[in-house]
Image: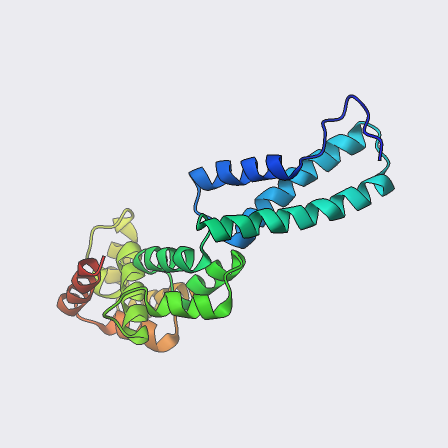
Length: 218
């Protein structure tokens, strides 16, 4: 393939390795993430080559060869220890649970970064070391409840106190509507109905005990 003088040369293994190291110096990444970064780098070169007049068919062979190089560079980063999907999954699961993300949400997030199912399961199980899976899910739901001022945290100051005051004035029907809305918040966040109901029915003192236990594990 002839490269016009106005077109930048295709990224070789050395250049792709430099791109990989520069990215990993700034961001934690899975092998999948790193490969996507390198694929985008190659895609930028392909667009520049097309703009410079290189025939699309002529790019096919070079692009395929670069895909293999990308896989090799990513494998090198794994061997060096710069990329470790297990460590990434464990750290990310811990952070997500403590931010109020459900097990389903954590699994989906890790899957989107190319983490294999066994690693996702292990990371979620170890997100809070002394908690069972059920306790971890409950603790995460309570974090969400605190953020959204739901259930045992409903008495905490709200940005829109007028809404709360109106609900109190309207009586049981408004309370039921607010409960239904709260259940929807949990459902959309991936929490099961049983967990959501337990959180909404929990006394404030017990809820605080759970959140303190979670903080102690941080």
